[in-house]
Length: 204
Image (cartoon, one colour):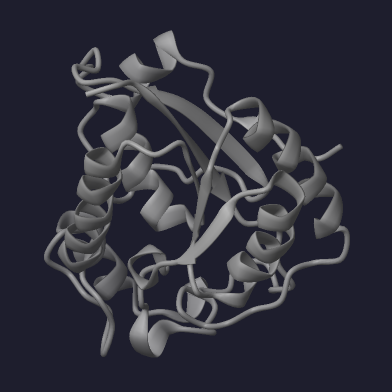
């Protein structure tokens, strides 16, 4: 197995009020996102990324269309890269959600699912499936997705145990990994960050 770069990117900031829950809800990018794509293009070209995988959400594929063209990458939309489905919580302020349910989620992030939504285990399984294919293909890839999927992909690429409720990569930021046959395994994200730069802003 050869080593290959994986550039993980979270979409640019969106036009959503502070404190509102959104996952599958399709929301628009905030003005100025084009300059973030310009910065991403420089990173993708530097990493010699050949393929760009994108979530189907408009806040991702709108950026992906421009980025693929700018950096000369093949664009592939993959539904497994969608954000967690929050079900009936979508579009509701976090402060208006039943506190008991939020506590239950915090205690069991893998098994808990919001009403009519998706569990952490569901998210884990589809992202793990995607990652296995990336490892098998050994392509120089860029992945444009959301906080939840990227939290897991960062762990897979960095060799540490995924934490479903760990802090997310900021919107409009990127992380570059060099994936090898035997990555140096670390036990936690904190250990990982001792050896790797956490993320790079893409604004230019």
